[in-house]
Image (cartoon, rainbow, N blue to C red):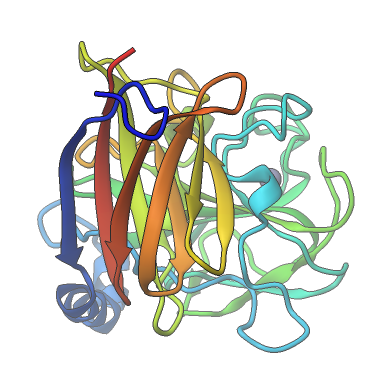
Amino acid sequence: MPKMGIHCRKLCLMLAFLLACPLVAAQDAAIAGHQMRLTAPTSADIEPVEHNVLHRPIQLLEGYAHWIDRSYAYGGNAMNSRPVHLGVEFVNARATPVFAAKAGRVVFAGDDTETQLGPQLDYYGNVVVLAHDIRSLRGRRIYTLYGHLEAVDVKLGQVVEDLARLGSVGSSGVAIGPHLHFEVRVGDPFDFRQTRNPELWLQHYIDRGLIAGSLRNQDGEPIYGRRLTVRSDTVSRDVFTYGGEVVSGDPVWRESFVLADLRPDEYEILVLNERGLPVFRDSVQVKAYRTTFVEIVLDE
Ligand SMILES: [Zn+2]
């Protein structure tokens, strides 16, 4: 069905659903009971939660980059110049304090020269991994990882509160320049193939929402590594679909792209082909504190 030169378009399913209210309740419950649960965790007494419950690990103050660096998003490879990204970057000066995204227990603290946490030894350098009392929709425990630190201020086994200081930004391991590398892992904190997109798990900024979605062909197979442009009258952002062996979407949501921190507005979503030409185009509405989920089936 040709329209404005676009030969194929099918918006299969589009949902906007409220996440904020039930999440706040679940988060409060988890925080209130965390001490008891940490000493005797069982799979039954920890609530599975939806996303958007983690604090940003960098202070929400002027002078600190508490936003995600979009040039090397989760699952991306920075135009084939970097390995597939297992997390997101907060690009900050050396010695910037790093904080716990949620209360939890330290399951790793120190350098990874002898314990493999990533694709190779000495990948994250000085690194902290926390186990949290929250579970994914499939009931698997959530972990967060803080890599390339300069200093580590916590010890193995230590119980930390919400936003406890864990260390400071550095460039240890394979980092190119000082920044915080932040990951969310599910189920197994030592398996780098168990990451999820942190953009789904971080709390919304005030009055911001996000777009998440999947891109599939007509047989229902996911399409990876495709560029999408999401734009409004005031902003335009590119995002690449992710998935496959090393990184993956949430097994319930099955998303392959996420764009967080969007102002409420109408956004046009374009899927581009190898030559940068749009092969799909449609519009969605972003609302504050909500996720707009878009499922795109590409007929090509
Ligand atoms: Zn990184």
